[in-house]
Length: 235
Image (tube, rainbow, N blue to C red; front, side, top):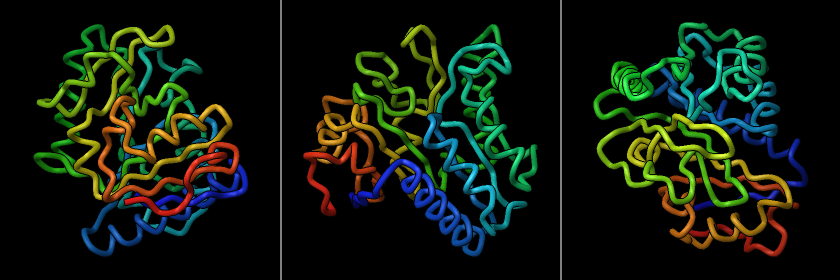
């Protein structure tokens, strides 16, 4: 696991956008397309607005959701709402190449299975994404892999549905799919992330983030999150 500590959240967002763009150019040159999954959060929305200005082969970019809250279309709680506002409105991305999780469905199990099939159709069987962007919650959750939820034990499906967490059920990528990604990019900012970032860097499997593959992972953290944590590269 590699770690970069940067001055503030805005600098982290800009660096993350540059890394995603570099991965996109490399993937398109090597395989003809770039398959990326993105998480929600304030810093990621800044990251995506910066990414929208990058020179990359946008026609070959395919964007998946890492997770989504079960909420109506257009709800401000929905990651998709912000994903469209920050990236789709600002980048020459083909709208058909953005793949929403269909959380409005009355049958969430079927919707999860549908998303898994979409991933297989686009990314192969089993699906392999070029890059998965992850955040880290104060409780150590990542994606919607939340402490104590049965979704943490899913090994036979790439998509899962959680129980209630902070007032919402959620749909999420599971460990098998995340850990197959060619690159994991962590974006961690804010003083409330000091403890979980330390646990992540120490491969503490008691938090959900600690069970993510490390050998292909890069952590971008701001100084607020990195306080009192080891900041050198960790393998």
